[in-house]
Image (cartoon, rainbow, N blue to C red; front, side, top):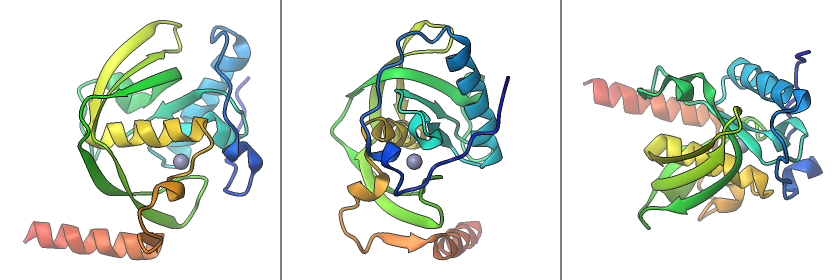
Length: 183
Ligand SMILES: [Zn+2]
């Protein structure tokens, strides 16, 4: 049975643990957890959600970029890509910086530098082994969620503590940028 999951916030020790591999994704517990997480990430309007963020220290996360702002031909991705026991290889050493937020750190944005092209291997919810390449925004979400499995929060990756702002300032800044681009 599905249930509403509660998102834990920074300060909860589960966010600082090293999560354990999922041994078998074909159990009702894991499949229900996945269903609940897919519902929760949509409800919370997030672009990703890792199991430790709902209090479950397992190596599992959802990548769900909003189809509105980022078009990807792969519908699975738009509905929410289910990633179990991932491993990541970088394709280039090139990094880009962008603003990130996190459902477990409400109201705060930080400028984070990350590798911008990665090759990932993981198990999907059908227990199939998948290898894929991601770049730009999806690569960023993937790396952010993967960090959660190792107890790392995006704030740990700030180059400078001054690279931080509240949601209010962030949304103002984005509006101004959009207005500029519109001109
Ligand atoms: Zn997060």
